[in-house]
Length: 219
Ligand SMILES: [Zn+2]
Image (cartoon, rainbow, N blue to C red):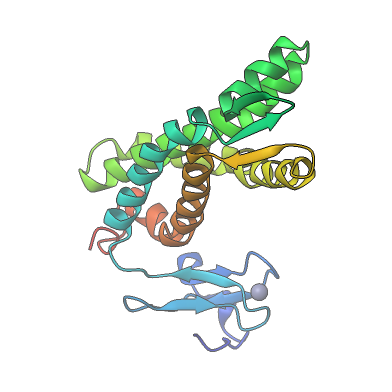
């Protein structure tokens, strides 16, 4: 936790010593953080940035775990539906194909992008960025990919997809026998790992490491 900084004298500080809150725009003197500390806006409580331990190694482990779960989450059955003697195994991919085959091509493309395409692209961007920091190669490409990542991150909507699956399960539970599949377990795992990754992969430290200012990100 950092104290609020008096407004007097801020205009005389160099820009790199200042930080503005993303939420309420309060301008503050940039605090020096030790490992494991975080700076919080004194006005609205928003986390300005954190200095986490082993950011790159921990993020790499999470990205690789997420990539390993990606295929089973999308291609193993989310649920098995038994209705009037008919049973069907539904996967995320089979949902996209079914939408395409029933004439809803544009919807199927959007579902594909939001549930599979963009989440995969996000993970690959994160992986490349982390590898470029870890092995100190191609940081300019890392910077470019990290910028792309920040533009596309809002478009991966696994949470929305997950809500859709939950609503479908609740609605269909009275009409048909539903068995939850291994795909759903992997999907939930993927979702949780991505949330965890958002917390661990502190953007402030990644930007600094990419621009070569920081020696702590790889610690
Ligand atoms: Zn604030």
